[in-house]
Image 1: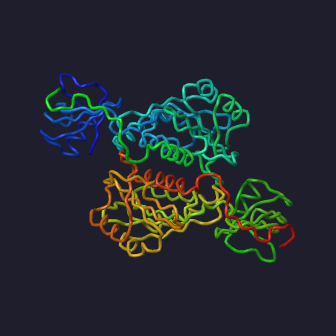
Image 2 (image 1 turned 120 degrees about the vertical axis):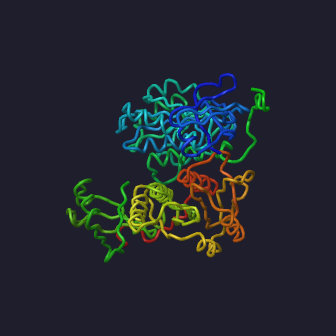
Image 3 (image 1 turned 90 degrees about the horizontal axis):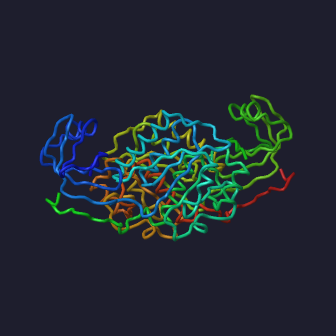
Length: 254
Length: 254
């Protein structure tokens, strides 16, 4: 299934796609009138539509059904990843979007080397969208750059905050992850690690550290591996019954 | 800890490093005579050495101790990843090396688009080495390019073969992974998926398919996520008692 993205809600039961999305449907996939395509608004809704107009600059679909969050994880996971040099941050961000992570925080810490330019931030937003679409997700990964102090100050909004810490020698993730969490923050420091006063501030705010094993993973590898570990333990990386809410949905109800 | 790589075994209790490794020790890290550095042979041995000569083109260390496989996973995991375009295959290979995967198989399948040039293969070997070193691993990731037919024919050398399959709708990894395996193969198909006859051949040879959830992950993301899932379930991504064998080791025994 191919999933398209359009922010605007349907009007009179019709969706209009323009720009690259329209061109892709008309020119690359060569869809025709009568074909079914799926469109998400990036806010959880997925519309099944029947194409009634196909032009390279404009495609119109009649909405035949709607699903809410059909393939989203049940838990809201946030990844705070210290800003990385080059395109490594982009890589982690896109992979997080593919997994259905809720929020991505490019984080400034004491030892962060890279800087988050506005160009880089725009690039993060772009790959978050492409990661959602390629993985057939329906909720856009939110991106909120923040320094560590601001993150610590707002730590209370998460049910639990977990800190991948290379000095942690005993505690594995499965020992600290609370099974009842609904929202979870995972923190990955810069290549040089967090500074001791940062670890202290995080712990005082309630963050719990865990070990990912005796090896030293590169920051971008630690990010995606920690997400996979957390989501597997939460049951969000297998095939389960989704909390899918069908609204409308019957043909003609739009 | 900084880990250096040198294939040759010590002679008379001394290791000699040359080329980039020597230059890095002498010029970048500015080590001096008397400093301790660690050197691995990529075959499981790690030597603690005391520097007795430090020049930009030659560094000599006296071996003070030796450990066997101090930070290796307990299970031998092999990743067979269908060849990918661009540098995505390199990315997965390097991350696999960081995790301590034993073998990486760049795989040709019916729908594989990218080709494995000799340049690309050399690049894989280079990142396998740098991934080992950066993660303080002591065993080089083996790289064995293969087409799917050859892999199927040799499937018997693995205790279990697991196939990430997007059409698998019910079975999660935790339901199929045998807890008693020592060697395990994980297969990740190309972007277009395996062909039905390939799935059939794999299953006839004993491979078991599993689902990574309802979302469609890009091949390179599927690779690293599957590795993280498998290694977490096997207990190889936490802090555990390692099967470390100390041989010699006492100061002066060399």
